[in-house]
Image: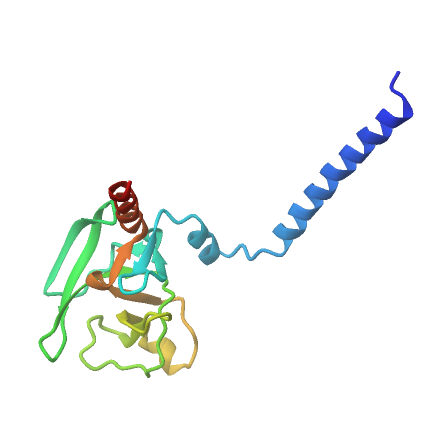
Length: 184
């Protein structure tokens, strides 16, 4: 038969476990379980600004089924360790060419107004998108024209990120590991 000290330790241990479970439940109750946040948390890999390494998006947010009629080039390529990432090349009115990938969401920021002049996606307006840390242009944000006219935010938003302005996290990690090996 256990003595009173052992019983007290057992009850203290059980109470500690219950408090830990309660703390986890409280944290879960305060979480936003929207689809957008779930997509972000189960990311396969981060897409980073090539200039400063700031997180811009996730590889699981890549859109591979939206091909523009304005694309000079559209082909699936192996990027970021993923086979068949849709890469499209566009040319702006100045003759500058950009290879881009499309993503559902990005951390890039814009302070410019919407424009539909020479848009690459019919029915969408765009604005330039910049890295929030270093200010480098990393792509464009596109939103459905109907949503803009009604002054509403739309779920019909996507981002075109310039391939040469981004790098994936695994690539950066491989460079750091390689550097560490050479130092040793």
